[in-house]
Length: 175
Picture 1 (cartoon, rainbow, N blue to C red):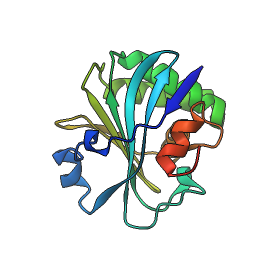
Picture 2 (cartoon, rainbow, N blue to C red; picture 1 turned 90 degrees about the vertical axis):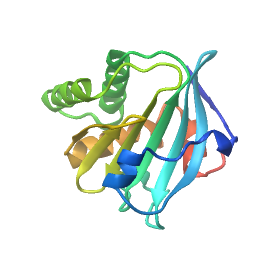
Picture 3 (cartoon, rainbow, N blue to C red; picture 1 turned 135 degrees about the vertical axis):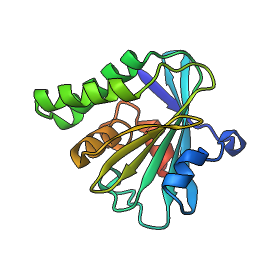
C-alpha cells in the first residue's frame, strides 16, 4: 500500500529543465510537494509547478492553466513499471476504452526511459492539448490527447488516488 509523507525541504526542488522553460516560457512556481513511498521504499520526490493563478485545486485534473508534475527519482524504476502502473491507475480511475488504453501505453513506452537515483521526469499538462514529457536535460516526447492528459493527471491528483497524502501535499491541502 502506498504511503506519502510531507517532504518540506524546498531547497531539494531544482529549477525546471531549460528545455521545458524554452518550450513553455513564463513564471512557474511550486504549488506543493511531497515524498512518495511504497511500503518502506522511497520512490520519488514530487513537486507540482503551476503558471499564474489559473490552477484549480478543486478540479486539478481539469485545470484551465498549464501545470507540471515533477518527479525526482530516489530509486531504480523501469519504464515498463512506470507505464504499467500508470495504465493500471488510469484504468481504475477513468475506465477508458481498452483499445485507447493500449494506444496510450504504446505512446508512453516510446517516450519514457528507465529511471534511477537522481533521474527526473517532468510532465507538462496543457489544457485541451495533452502532455509534454521532459527529462533533466531534454524533451522526451508528447502525447497530444486531452483525454490522456486528464486520465494521466488523475493518477496523482484525483480524489481517489492511491496516494491521498501526496495529493494533499501537491495541492496544498491539509492531509
